[in-house]
Length: 172
Image 1 (cartoon, rainbow, N blue to C red):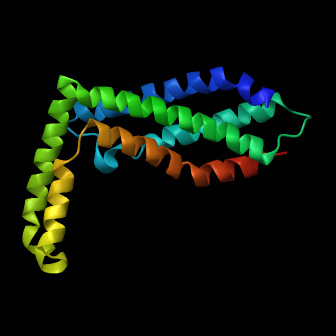
Image 2: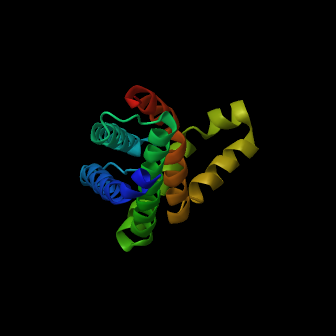
């Protein structure tokens, strides 16, 4: 357990680096007039995946000759994902609370409501009016907190399988 605790500073630094890289990715999207919400943020998970592999390799490499238990490696990576999820969620929350973030969010909501309106008849025909109005309310209910909450929960859920596979691969 001391090994895990001794790795916390490395995990924090790599987590912050990941969030910085995700911020750069979102900035590049924004500069190219692509709003980094919905599925546009998904490639940022690749950054976390590469970091997980890097950390697992480093930790196993540092412990050559001694056995690294699967569960320790799994926990180690999940601590990293948890830290990254918290830092990323906080960064997104504060960004979307800022004036610039609110403008981006309002643009996203406006565009999404417009797109939903284009398919109104089809949605109502197939799913009903209530479903259409739930979608509309859901879109209009997007705010800084909901984006941060989604970032946190998605990081944790989406990391499970890669975390499992990486831990199995690098265990000794």
